[in-house]
Amino acid sequence: MNANETNASEIFEDEDTDFTYEATEAEIAEAIAQCLAEIKEMNLGFCKSFSELHDHIDANELGGFCDNRYGWTVDAMNRVQDAVSDVLEKNS
Image (cartoon, rainbow, N blue to C red):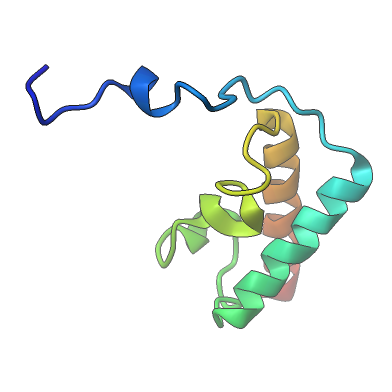
């Protein structure tokens, strides 16, 4: 590692990177609603799936997953993304 490289453990030293927070059903519903509102705001409703959103944006940042929902379990994040994908598919 040279002087310009940073070790990931240094970046996340004070962060909870365990992804262990079990979101409640209400929190999951809130995250789904936030994702759909952000998609609408960005005029990306033409996308037919969550995966297709990645052609236009970093879809993993929708719903606050890189901000206030950091640390949710992968299962919880997948549930949100699957639900958003289902809505997009039904609306296409």
